[in-house]
Structure formats: structure tokens, C-alpha cells
Amino acid sequence: MRLIIKDLCHRYDDLVVLDGIDLTVQEGEVLAVIGPSGCGKSTLLGIAGGIVAPTSGTIAVAGEVPDGCLNPITFIFQDFALLPWRSVEDNLSLVLEHHPLSAAERRERIESGLRRMGLWDFRKALPKQLSGGMRQRVGIARALAVRPAMLLLDEPLSALDAQTRELLMEDFLSLWQRERTTAVYVTHNLDEALRLADRVVVLSRRPGRLREIVTIEEPRDQRLEPSAQAHLAEVRDRLWHLIRAEAQLADREIADA
Amino acid sequence: MPDTSLPMTERSAAPPQPVRFRGGGFTVKGHRWAALLAFVVLIAVWESTNRFGLVSELFLPPPSAVASALAAMAQDGSLWQHLKASLMRIGVGWVMGTVAGMAVGFAMGIGSVARAVGVPLVSAFFPIPKIALLPLFILWFGIGEPSKFATIGFGVFFPTVIATYSAIDSVPRNLIRMAQSFGLPWASILRKIVLPGALPGILAGFRITASIALILVVAAEMIGAEYGIGAFVLTAGNLMLTDQLLAGVLVLSLLGLSIGTVLSILERRLLKWR
Ligand SMILES: Nc1ncnc2c1ncn2[C@@H]1O[C@H](COP(=O)(O)OP(=O)(O)OP(=O)(O)O)[C@@H](O)[C@H]1O
Ligand SMILES: [Mg+2]
Image (tube, rainbow over all chains, first blue to last red; front, side):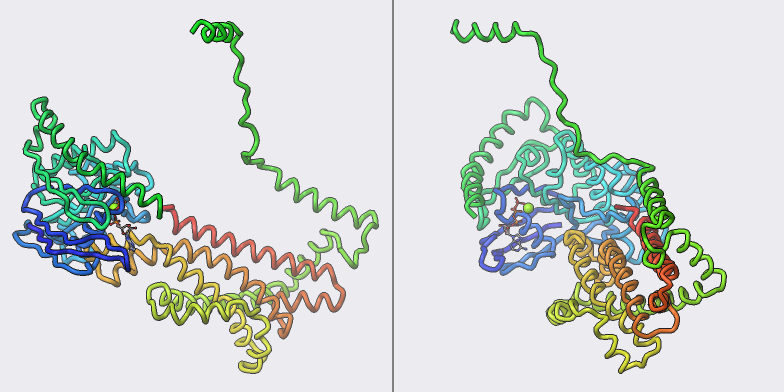
């Protein structure tokens, strides 16, 4: 599915957060969004997913949705957003219960989601009994259970430690290897963007404007190869160069406020 | 360089000093029998002050006299009669106040108009000592049960409203956004997210309102009732039967204790996930 954002502006009261964003997320691509703190990345994602109403501008989708898709645009959250009073399997069930599915189909979706993320043995556990990484896997399994056409990920790994982050990145890679689900991936972390994205959108500091879109040519599954390192280092330098000054200024701004 | 290296070697020549432990205290350790022992000592001291004639039995009857007064009440059936009357009043008044309070609290928790109207009203009525309204309720409903139900219900209502709507406020917004992003309908969000998320706060409110109900039932029974623990305590006081009076107080504190225990069990059952 494609997502087309046209001339998007957003204000919270007097605070202009996003200004003149024009952006198309292509079918099957993973688009990373980076930018300094508070530049409106989460707001952009919320608008794209229809849970924040933009001040002005339009958002549209086009293209096919997969078979059995119940929720074309699906979020994966930084803080996982699991119901603490529901077990792992019931957290998946939550997003299916309001759809007219047979009990068998619901069970099948829950089971395949949990098995994909290696959670089957933990299906009766409560979120508090799981590690951060496992909780985010529940978040991913929940998203997979609705067979989404597009994933919106808001810093999905930034609540996790470095090793867990690495493991979860592998999970995302295999997900995009198999499903090629279109995704918008907001992150602070250049390494995540370099490992996972096809293109990287760089936003300026608040009000967030589109500074540049950097394409990463290397195929996703070859980015750990030695031959890819030179190109990736180049892209990394470029991105860092773009955000460094912005981040520094944004940092001052927040300290002043 | 040489004069900085010299003290270094001097220092390293000194024998290693053990690091002194300084992390003691400021932790709470459990002492299993301390509470029980304190009770036993307290009762023993109390009993002996009477035995040695330090305190008149009229002003402070010994625990043994209180116990036998309680036993006598249990035997002639008056204990049950009074307890039944009080429990019925607490039950009816508390349920009325709680049901109404939760309904209003929910409306204020999710509706901005209800909140705008409700908050000033609740803040205005909340501080009224509800027992002061009993005479008015007696005028309205007569001296019988309804005026007591109304006093208790009214006293329970406002704290329930406040507990309910602040509990709803404390439901994490991100969970509601999550549910919306998966397309859950409004009623499902209310039932599956808001209600369970607010439950801890609502149950904490029950604890407060249960103790309010207990205070109000005693006060109301002292103003106008034939039966009820409050009436019994007042009568015993008027007749200077202090052993019976204290037996009534003991029943009240046991009642409060058992209500607290029931609520704890309920919390443990319903809030296992915390
Ligand atoms: N609901 C809101 N009401 C008012 N201001 C808001 C609201 N949500 C966000 N903001 C402000 O808008 C700006 C952009 O917020 P947003 O969360 O979109 O930024 P972000 O790029 O995701 O930041 P971060 O990198 O910290 O996640 C911030 O300054 C924030 O304080
Ligand atoms: Mg954000």
C-alpha cells in the first residue's frame, strides 16, 4: 500500500510542529524518519495512522491490501502498549474480537502471530512477566495478527537495551524479507535506519520540515557484508552531517524552554 | 615526574585497608511475632490495671469484662439483632451511593460536558459533613430506614465520584490510542480498556467509602434508631454499662477489619496483573 502525504501542517495550539510536509511512502518500502527530539516525528506518524487530526493537508492511501487484512494501517509502539491485565494471547485477541471472525480463524491468527515471534510458550503469561524484548515481540505479533498493509513504528526499539535491539532488528529484517509490508519507521538511531530502511527521511528541528531524503542502495540482507560497509559509512556520514547541527540547536531549544 | 611518582609508591606501599561496611539500617525487616506480642502485652497491662485497682471498673472495664459482655450479647441474640440492622444500613446505603457515584464518575471521566458541570458541584458538596444533613433527611424521609440510607448513600456518593473519575484519568492514554488505532469501537474501548484500567483506583475508593459508611451508620444510629450497633453503644453509655459499650466498639472495629479483609481479597483477585 502507498501512503501519500500532501502539504501537511500541524500545530498544537500555537506550537507549529510540522510544516509543509510532502511525502509518498512507496508500496513495499521501509521508510525511516529521523530528526531531532520534538521535531514532530510522532505527530507525523499519528497523523499518517489517523489518530491525530492534522491542522491542514491531506493523507491518502492507495493500492492493494493483503488477504484477510483487518486493519490496513497498524502501529507498533515504543512503549509496547500492551494491556497489563490481559495475557499475551488475550492481548492479541483484543484486536480481533471486534471483527466478525470465526473462533477457529481467530485462534489461527493468534497462534500464527505468536509462533512467528517465538511467543507460543509464553501465551498465558502476563506482560509484567516478560522482558522488554518479549513485550515488543507481543506488540509485533499483535500487529501481524491483523495482517496489516502498512506498519507505522514509532521508535519501536528505543526502550530496549542494545543486545535486545539487535535481536529485534533481526526479527524485523526477516519480517520484511518474507512479507514486504510497507513501513514507516521513526527512530533516533542512525544504525537502525541504516540496517532497516530503503530510504531515510531527515526532518529539520521544530517546526519539522523535510530536509532531505537519502536512499540506501545496498539491499537489506547484504548490509552486514564487508563490501557494503564503505557505502553505508558514506550514507551514515551524510545523515549525521544533516542532523548534527539540527540536533544541537534543538537540544539548546529544549534546555531553554 | 619523579616527585609525583614518589608519593605514589609510598601510598601503594601502605597495607590495603578493608572497605568499611556503611550500608546498614533504613531497611524494614519483618518481625513475625512482634505485633501479636504487642497485643498480648497491651491486654495484659489493661487487665492488670483493673485487678490492682488502679482504674475504676466503671471508667475502663477490663478486657475480661468486655469479653463476657460480648459473650452475653451473643447468647441472648441481641448482638445479631444489632449487627443485622447496622449491616443492612451499611449495605443498602453503600450500594446506592456506590452505584450512583460510579455512574456519575464514569460520565465525568469520559464526557467533557459532564466534567465541566460535575467538578464544581462535587467540590462544593464533598466537604459537607454528611451527618449534618441527617435532620433534613429525617424531615424528608421520616425517622425510619430511608433517612439513614440517604445519609450513608450521600456520604459514599461523592468520594466514589472522585475516585472513579480520577481513576479513569489515570488510565494510560497510550492504551486508548492503541485501541483506537486498531479500530476498536467506542463501547469496546470503554469495557475492555477504561473499565479494567480504572479498577485499581475504583477499588481504592471502596476502601475509603467503606470506612465512611461505617462512621455514618454509627452516627445515624445514635441519632435515631432502636437497633444497630451505634444505638446499642449509645444506650450502654447512657446506662453507664461501659463493658457493653466497649463490647459494641469491639464489634465495630471487627466489622471494619472484616470489610477491609474482604476488600483486600477482592483486590488480590481482580488485580493479580499488577
Ligand atoms: N498533544 C500535544 N499537545 C501539545 N503539544 C504536543 C502534543 N504532543 C506533542 N506535542 C509537542 O509537539 C512537539 C512534537 O512532538 P512529537 O512527539 O511529535 O515529537 P517527536 O519528534 O516524536 O519527539 P521525540 O523525538 O522526543 O519522540 C513537541 O515539542 C511536543 O512537546
Ligand atoms: Mg516521538
